Amino acid sequence: MAINQELYQAVIDGDREAVKKTIQQSLDQNVEIEGLLYDSMIPAMREMGDRFSRSEIFVPQMLISARAMQAGLTILEPLLAETDREAPAKVGIGTVKNDLHDIGKNLVTIMLKGAGYDVIDLGTNCSVEKYQEAVDQGAKIIMCSALLTTTRDYIQKVIEHFNDNDEVKIIVGGAPVDQNFADSVGADGYGEDANSAVKIVEDIVRSK
Amino acid sequence: MNTLIHKLKNKELLSAPLVGYPAAVLNSTTAKQNLTNSQIQIDTLAKYYRRLQPDILFPFMDLSVEVESLGLLINIKENDPPEVIEHSIRNEENLAHLSLPDLNRHRFHIFVETIAGLKDKTKAAVSGYVTSPFTLAGLLTGAERIAARTITRPKFISNLIDFSCDVGLKYAFQQQKAGADCMVLLEPTASLLSPELFEQFVTPYINRFAEQLDIPVILHVCGNTEPLIKEFVKTQMDGLSLDYGVDLQKIMPQIPKDMLVLGNIDPVRTMLGSTPNIIYRKTQNLISDLKEYDNYIPATGCDVPPETDFENIEAFQKAVEDIRKARKSEKMENLRHN
Image 1 (cartoon, rainbow over the protein chains, first blue to last red):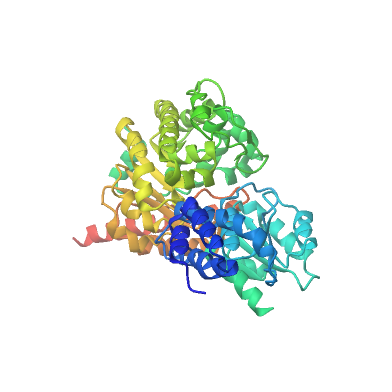
Image 2 (cartoon, rainbow over the protein chains, first blue to last red):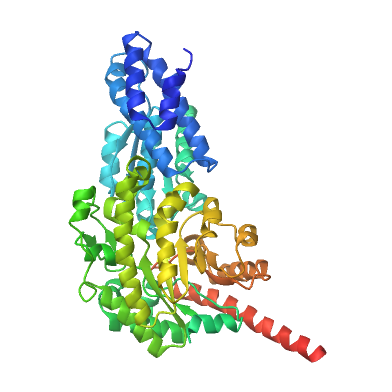
């Protein structure tokens, strides 16, 4: 299916109303719904992610695009559930225990949803048990977000908890961590920013 | 005379690591004790000064003081910086219920007394801290909400920042009166903004501090702020405190010579996560890379985490002192030859 330029642009512009209107018009014309998502909306969010990585746009623009995307997904998701498409990979994400900061986690969540993943948002102050709940619900990728330096020990604890489960991959991100830390504690990936976090998820899903 | 201006006039290489919390180890106190008792905080920071003699002393960094005074919930933890847990100012109606806080109540006096106490007990330039207007507004309404609403509800956000600015100015005047030699505006949330949004939602408000205070005003923004540097230099700030994400060598040519630049040893990966030897070397390398800039002050990029080993901070200070000594001897040598 060709790109729906109007829908693509509405996501880029963060125009929620235009997204909803264009989707509704497309549905009225019996346009294939998967195409709307995979050929127009997801590429638009991917483009925003790339612009974000190049510092051409910033968090506010990213957020309103993601919210426009979310408004579209709210219409499309029940319809997509009725199709025989392959279920998207499930990801559990949360800010680690004793940390209540969530803007980074929310940004990654929004971008993952924008990229078509099924995301379980565990919120902030997440204990090992909370991450385990996401795995029990089918998540194969766990993402630990943090802002406070004091969370580094707890991130390690989360990774140790899943050590025996080869099916679960752990990605870490946030100010107190880096690639060296991720390597030293045995994480499967490190997301330097929201866009790179999504790309790491894509790499893991592709390699499975 | 203002101690900072005096020190700058002497053109010494100054040192200004953003250290508060790690110094608590010197008198076996907790972060909470320091944040709730001025005598303890004065004792902690005076001990730190006696040990290392930094040129600029900063109080414990606490971005919850103003928010708490406005009635929102915060959590003062035993050994970590406090957290704001309620961000409930979501519309004009909520904002209308807020009024400027009484500085004699809440925890303002702890930091004001700390400044006065440190002026009395040390020869350092003592800085005040204020939660900068955009960041305070973000704490009141939520960081994600303020970021999105700069686009979707700019009028409400401007009104919220305007109120936050009045709160900050009131607190800043009190710290200036207590003897603060400079004022650092803590503006971490501004790192989320584009240059255009920074110009609209940050610059006009921080400029009010520069216009109304009689002491140098320094803007501190965390993270990689390279895309915002052009906006920073257009402000009326006397100085910038830049985080580790910024390549100082690259941006220094853009900074006017009369604008101070503090930075930018990585507080987490270097100060917390490495060894004294590495810190010493990285600090010396940074100073050496920036030796042609008289407006540069060696500092950490952001507040040094509480659990940082004190010997790591000693290594930073020693690196600055050793270069200072080497420069002095070089100067003497040159004088002898001439």
